[in-house]
Image (cartoon, rainbow, N blue to C red; front, side, top):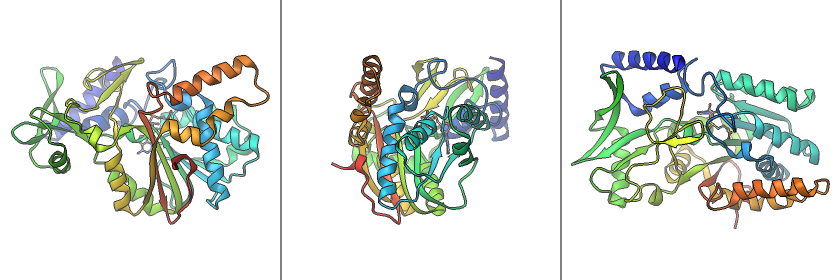
Length: 368
Ligand SMILES: C[S@@+](CC[C@H](N)C(=O)[O-])C[C@H]1O[C@@H](n2cnc3c(N)ncnc32)[C@H](O)[C@@H]1O
């Protein structure tokens, strides 16, 4: 609570400096990434049973092993065996991929982790040092910004949903909502009547015919993110995995309160003003907007498939039946596959989008 109070104080200062209000994207940026205070920039365990939410690498090593099979298939077609993972969380995905490479004799040259949070970087280093050989550790490098140049496979699990979003509300016309601080608490306030976010939602509204009081989000980070990555890659395949929808579903007339969600100790609720810095704030990914941003940056879009489809195509079921595993292990692995692939669990809500630069490789997880 002391920690949260310090962050509140900091955000109140930002609001005062900005003349009394900031955009919601700025508020979310401070809540998650304010140096030393934001949710991802400091403090407690976030992922897994002891944290606030569980991601696919926390559910099962089979997730990373399936991605490693996809990587191996791409390396065989000539992709350089370098990896670049965005936002590596606890480090489990990296561990599972590299264990799989090692156990199957798959050659790899480097694994870079781009992690903006110094706190998470430190946790990942401690964890991976315990889990991997000294030889493997020598080939892992941590970065806080994009590398100068990259050839290989780029990965990110649940990174796009952690990017700050702008909040928009339809009244007689579209408004962008921001955040003010009044009567000792953060409050929604009107932020703009004309902004990039409003122009984005107006274009969507022309197709989706959204009703009065429709409140939702748009993400202005996809375009700079794709542009930045494109500029630093020579030849690359990019696989981003996240929960999200195509636009017709995201901006469905009945989804009139958007997809913004907060997580605190495995409970989810929609109020971003509770416990700043102690709770995660996320929004679903608009995969159409992301694909458009990728195309505008110069990438080709290879496909969008559900996580279930992607994992099945990469042999997740074969991975359960490894010859050295006993019946109990196999039962537990079967349960993990169910969590990763069933439609009511992570199977359909999560999707994988693939991009390529200067390549036209066949990505087995995105085919068929
Ligand atoms: C929800 S966590 C997911 C962690 C991990 N990938 C997993 O699946 O368990 C979001 C992660 O994305 C990172 N992140 C957010 N924005 C990022 C960006 N622009 N570049 C790289 N990482 C980012 C956060 O610091 C955090 O590690």
